[in-house]
Image (cartoon, rainbow, N blue to C red; front, side, top):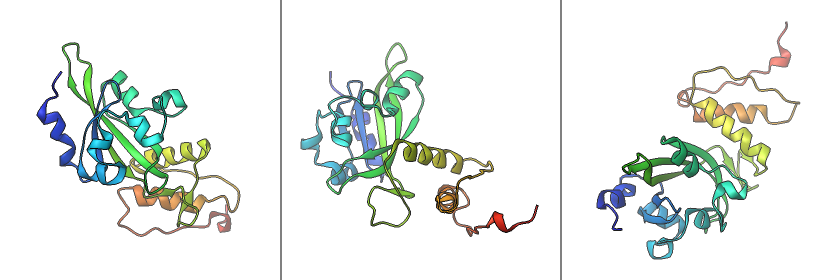
Length: 193
């Protein structure tokens, strides 16, 4: 079945790496930013997204990770996930947003747009500034940071001295709508009742 030219051109409207994936997880289009990061379209064509981004032969959800494409297919709405992607530059934390596209006659999406944004708050590399990690509990914490930063709620960070509460607070600030304002840490243990 031929692909809709509008669907194939969609990734080019993004500055961030973006691809179009079909229901079988096959990459059918990629913008230049994605190709610069993960390989030429000749290398990517008909490869599955999980092969390129994770080096897995099975989709993310079958490899123990959250799969935003599966959730977008089931819900019919945009989904986000924090993943560790493999790239020629090494492993990296990325925010993945998956959008369902081109519903069929039953309303099920035929394609998905995946936009990949490198995380500004965490790294895999120990020689970088900021938070570093890849354990499932670390990934769950980063997901909470992203969710709370986009809302206007108060967050209470608890943990022992030296556990990184200030780094997490700074990450929330940097991802929030208040990021252009000053970040002022307050040592609460020095406050009276």
